[in-house]
Length: 278
Image (cartoon, rainbow, N blue to C red; front, side, top):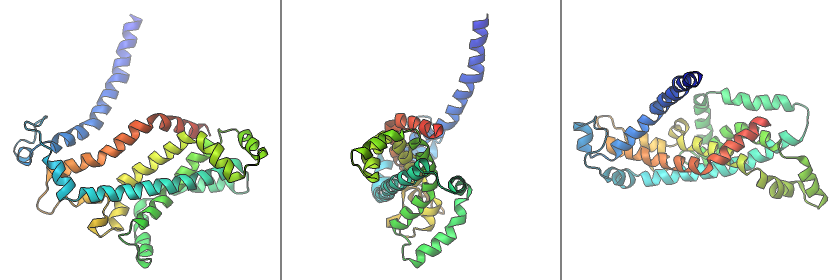
């Protein structure tokens, strides 16, 4: 009797809410994929079909070739990968300083880093636009790389600081005894042990840069420099929307994030665990 009651409680309070949450989350993704494989005529005439009657990849071909998604995809990759590389280097060094050194103002500085995450991104648009316009960097990927790096470094610094705190100092001291400099200790001793933290930092940074829309829209007015989110938005015209190509473009934009999480999930969990312990 007790076992049956426990099973019923588990079903009601665990599996049912989890199923509802997953359905709410996954159904829009499923519908986007379903629409991407439908012919344009079927999308308009039979919008409630749960499976495409005549599956086609024409929408993907149109999005990639005619709409210019190949260019948008390349731009997003350049911005995302470059930002991840810079953020990992900077956040590792700054996180190391916060973790290993005790200095006056350390805690207020750490709180100030966290406080920057409460600033709405929309407040930065006008100052950023003026700065990059005066520097001649509007519609230049460098403006996005600089902005995304500045936005991400405070959070990733705190993340890396917590993870570095869990690595024993004795390992660096042993390397110093063998004649290694501080940078050599970080490169050859810390970096291999920091792999989960580095992956966690890289994933969060890449997903942010891959999905970010508002800053990319305001700092880019040349279509050949659009990132994927901006390119998707310009597929919705004033009087006409190509739903098939738009859905196909959304699926294309989703693929790198899914592959990245599938590959990095183990490192991501352990990396976040290290940060929390720190």
